[in-house]
Length: 362
Image (cartoon, rainbow, N blue to C red; front, side):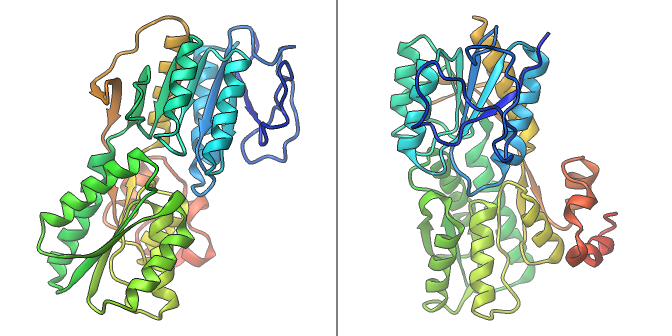
């Protein structure tokens, strides 16, 4: 039997009907490998795995390979085509149209623009192709299934964790909120959770910003501007590790010491390093393996005409919503390293070796 494999197409504009996509691993140089199928769709069908951006490293490093590996277990003759829209909704639309034209049996979609992506859902469903929305919900067109961590809970958890830290430190002042992309409905859920978490505490919100495309540089530029306006910033609730990293860079560039507590989300390696070093206060561990494998199971079930089990309904879409974990220096060893998410070799480079050792991370 053939093994399911991952195929990456960087530019879909050059793809014509009936042409096989290039086969390669995420982050590779684009070298091809045998698809085991003349038409590029696999004996049991093609599953399109459409991710939104390159601003986060997770899609290349974790989501795509983990999803593909799980599909390989469940459907060895299936083909997974991974494509990344690089924050371009028009490009993602083209990728989806190509998948539909080539006869994909299921589409897993993490939308760049969740409102614009409603067209992808309706077009795919009109062609008889089930759509699994992944990580980011589409609110205006019910998909066939939604798999994610609970995004509103993520926002509430990181904000509440920060507020508790500030209360424990006995500080006086206000907080900034750095939200995610205004075109991402998941970011809006995180935003609601963050605002609720801060508003439940005693610290006023000085200002907040919706970060276009989740761009860390845009987050950094905005925070830099706030540092010229406010002298009483005691913490920052940032919606993910990229915007958190941009926030921290703004404080560093301004020479602020110590850097006030800054949140994050996604548990990227760089964020774990910052937590270990003490420059980022928290992040969210939402093991990508959990959602990637769940999405793979749902995709294979739907393409086989089966009904996946849901535990919730969100925006008229049956859903599986998983609960994440807040990570700080207090539990980073247990959650990240003992939990097998990363190894010390991956995180504890020379710059962080002493800080890792101090936390017992070896």
